[in-house]
Image 1 (cartoon, rainbow, N blue to C red):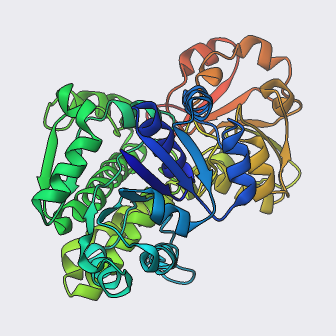
Image 2 (spheres, rainbow, N blue to C red):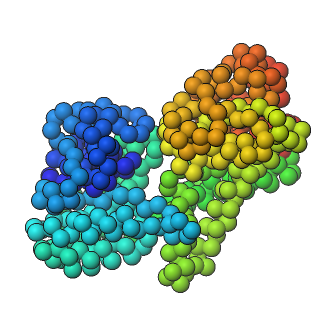
Image 3 (cartoon, rainbow, N blue to C red):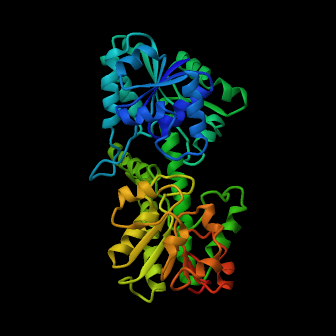
Length: 441
């Protein structure tokens, strides 16, 4: 099929390349000419395993090309995927819908033939109805430019796999025609047995925000248990392992530590709460405010624990931070817990040097006040404390005996609870962790 993908950020670039790899003719559209030039040259503007190879292949084949013109997009596409961001509004918890509204205002006046406009962005419930009314008003073809909602379920570091082999596909439609079009778009996945759920647009919108709210709640629940364990002498890692064997609970997203971040979960749960307030059912989602507070408190607990391990003061101390991305497998530093902790410690008088395998350039742009190193050993030189804040496999493979000869004081705080602390201890390190009250710092 001929399709456009409007917005070539993280979601859009992955979706465009993967759809082209499935054999569709895809036009990626964005206002950022430099980004489009990079994509057209086969270069990804962010780190995502597997994407560079697919991008290079689909651009070379001619299945994927790029444009800045919404008029060209309207003339080209039978299906238009909306993949623009919905960031948090400045000074508000609500989602900023101006990027999507701007696309509709620019695209709809050029829609002269029957087509399907498909939202993939995470949006406040009710958005698809509002956009459908606006498109019907602006488009020469009127209501024959239908709107559907097809939420994305990508996870950074596995986005290509999540797109080509998803665990489910949800389409919210209002007609058999729209259902048939999206069935054709995803025919390869359907034939392979991927669960395919057809519903109304409102439910499709709610599926995505509900999934993110549940995942955020699960992370904050185990971090609340970490606080309990610290107060009582329990071990949250064993607790999480034990309850995770219950199939109703499961082990995924049940790792206590410095909390979640990134460009999705934090802003999505806030926007969901804000939308609930607007629609008059705010009490139903009031618990999400607690989820958010517990998550942010995990960052402060990390700072406090680090201060305690440094005998109550940061001033004049040297702190090494292992990790800058909000999660391993990504170079995304949006709302990164690691950088939030690093910056807080720096503001309290410590000299902080940060390492990350992929995110250093983005981290330096976001937090130029911090010091950075290209090698973990260099970041740890002369350190009074080493903080493990992003769970890269590279850090689990560090040799504590060798690193002890680099630091000033062999002292480690594992704020991700993934290092073998007994192994570090045997090599002379004082170790600490979050939620492990039975572990002496």
